[in-house]
Amino acid sequence: MTMVLIPVLILSGIGFAMASLLAVGRRVFAVDVDERQELLMDILPGANCGGCGYPGCSGYAAALVTGAAKPTACPPGGADLAQDIGKIMGVEVEDVPDMIALVACAGDAVHAPERARYLGIQTCAGAQAVAGGVKKCTHGCLGLGDCADACPFDAIVITQNRLAMVLPNRCTGCTQCVVACPRHMIKMVPRGDSVHVLCHNPEKAKKVKAVCDVGCTGCKLCAKQSKRLKVTGALAAVDPESQGEDIPQDVALACPQGSIFDSRFHSLSAWLTEPSAREAFAQQSEAWKVAEKERKLAAKKAKAAKNAKKTTPDESAEKGGPA
Image 1 (cartoon, rainbow, N blue to C red):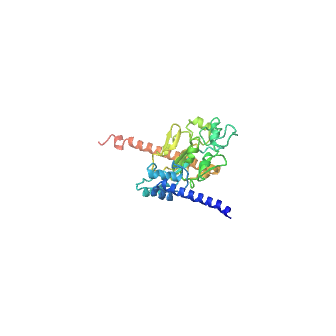
Image 2: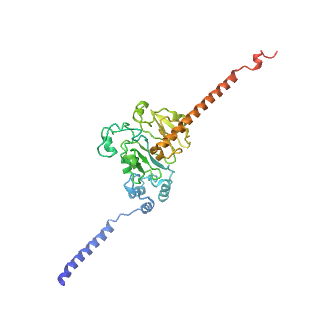
Image 3: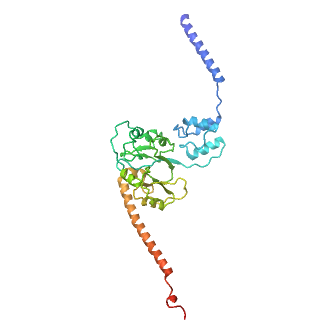
């Protein structure tokens, strides 16, 4: 019995000694944590997406209390969270726009075919490394899902015709997809914007038409309908600096290539996956163009009539004036 108790007593003594050392070490090496950091952790979303630029929410909270991070750096939390962080930190926070990701391309396998068959590693980065990708358009979406894999919120899906598509109701604006895209064609846009140019190809019209049926040709017809549309080189885009003015539906209707998406006509999912949506829109576009042509003709006639009235001499002049 004594022989059995001796090992037990030895192990108990070792355990007690180790526990005492750990307790002492905890006191000696204890690190004081700013109570604000704990308050911040209570309100942060816990997504650990890295959108703030720090390793998870704990890293962001630590950076906030040291002043290294801004209250507006958490995309999933949005404007409301930024205000709550400001209250804890005792600082005023300006309103920040709610941003979501947009894949600036509508050229799927139907509209922008491939020039070869790719059998390598099934990632966009892998395909891009092989002669710049196998798609005829060297600027468009490769559709192998690097962005979808990078998204921690399952906000990106790959369509049946191999095109990445963002689901706006799930996107938090964490920007992980922007980083993951090897072609740098995913951009952040205001959630409330209804009009987007779904093209990233900066080449001239002839080259664009050769590789994609729905690519922007830089014709500038959209820019004539709204000052918020700018054409740089041969590529149109919604000017991010010009805010406050609604973009008229005429912008999308005027585009001859169908490169401009307007959510007031169709959902993004319908626009990218349902041919009937594009067919219906094409009919609307043709009807608009006919009406626009008639409107311009009527305005031209009215202007000509007005000018003619100004230059026509009055009756008294024709009769030689008063006697």
